[in-house]
Image 1: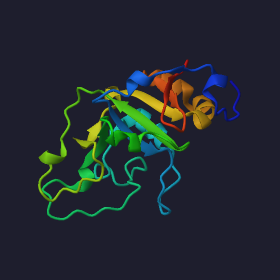
Image 2: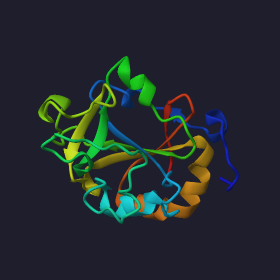
Image 3: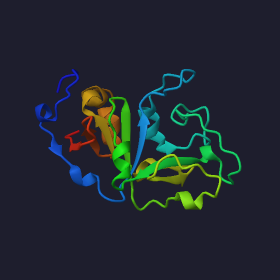
Length: 186
């Protein structure tokens, strides 16, 4: 494939993979580039392929750990920045959180990884998403079971990081802007 942005799944000869969106699928969404103005322009994909997913509080100077949102929580026995946020797929709530932007990276996580639920977090814990669950500190790269990149950014990311992604043994998928996931040949 060329380095031009291809945005049509049929042009790419992709096979739809709707069964990935089953009840209980764990996934983490992040932007490839930090969104805060004061953040460095570090590509999060590089660090995630090496370190896995880490909480903002584990390494506050690491660009992959810098949260794109500002939330301060008081009164919780668990620091808000000490967990990795996941979505546990469940209809109808998860429809709102499917990947839909070219800058989005969607990481699928081993569904057997132990998670904390909102009820485990204490009375002062704010619930931002109705399908959220949490893993303390870090999700090792070995527990990442897939990576989905938008069709619009797929060729560019594959040309830059195809070898690193293949070496990580993380299956690579792509998604259209409606949240549909497709198998790839990377």
